[in-house]
Amino acid sequence: MVGARNLSTFLDRIREFLLDLGEIFFLPDGIYFYCKSRNLSSKILIFEWLEGGKSTTTKYLTGPMLISELTSILYRFLRFNRSLQRYFQALDERIRDIISKEINIQVLDYMRYVKFFITMLRKWFNVDISREVSLSELGIRKGGLESVLKYIREEKTKAFALIQRWNLLKFLVPPEGKMRVLNENGFFEYSVRSVPPNKLVVFADSKRFVVSLQKVLGWLLFLVARNLELERVRYLMHIEKRLEEGFISKDQLLIILTKELVERGRIAIPVSVAGVRTFVGLRLVGKTVYAYINTGEYVVREILGPHKGLYVYFPPVDICVELRAKNLPDGNFVVYPAEVPVVIDEYLHPSVRERVGKRQVCLGKDGDFVGKLVLAAKEIAEKKKAKVRIIGGFTVISTEHALAEILRKAFTVVRYGYRPGMTPYRSAAACAGVAGVRIISDKRELEELKKRGVEIVE
Image (cartoon, rainbow, N blue to C red):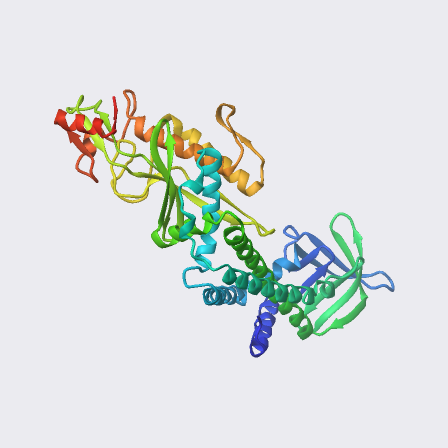
């Protein structure tokens, strides 16, 4: 992915970058840089002549940095990440050409959230997802899918070939007992002897020319390009895995729900919580994915202020939890709840501070428990823990488990938490007039709501 006409420009930019750093010292454990302060140094070089053993110069070095870390810095410096984004766009267009305009990288990218959501429904809400979504909605040609998979595998093969060809680290890393130095005059090697704890005796008259600076710049450029190919392979692996899971496997519901999420910004599946029929789902707002549980409509009896004893009607609202996804090096991924519950729609409730915006839901005494659930989910996702124990010995065994508990707790607190002894932001009656919240002053209306199955929370 490195064009020949850009080669000279890239080499000039790498030269400018490296020479600005001064001499670079290559040792078997990594790269070191010149440092003026002995206190900040991690290695001390003492240059001696083999004949006579006299010390000539002392230099202080800081490090080590892995060569892969240096090439990662050069990767960003040369803006190879932009080249990768252009490649992703081209891949998206290629997939569209092969399948249809309905399926693109955006759909594939959000599949992981939907897969996570489906797993949570099956395991923690006991929902048979196949009964809720019709397979007849799937309008994807199998032949087109196989063509996309073939194209992606061919791209992976090309990238792997380049990765193997450009593994030039062996030319930069010196063998034990040697040190290499890169400067404007070229790449040189010295014999060294280690003196614990942090000194190296460098035999000055063992200096040997290895290759020119230009040659090393070329090696580094190929290593930077190799990083780009590694990122390309990782991304292709994710796309391939999502295609196989979403289309080729029997569970084709995954692609149906993902398409609905991307096109409509929302999916919803009926569930039962605390004996109440409601629904949970996913929402896509910009590029942020939220899991949510809907409160359903309900009525509470006022316990505060001049309206005490009257009934206040609350229309349905989504209680949302932001989700995050993290790609793993093996081509898999993890999805986990990343924050405590919020309300993102216009709405007013005793446990919500403001009328609009993204507002955290006050969960009272349960707030600490929910916060610990969020932290436990992050630990399981990022540190690959099998389980995490939190308050009261409660054990979280998966990120799906954590999300299910967060949604259930938020539903229960918002719907049933308005009780004597609480300290709300405002009374229930004070919410009237916003987004359908209203005081019910007519008993006949209250009876009609009961007949319709709306719960009256006394």
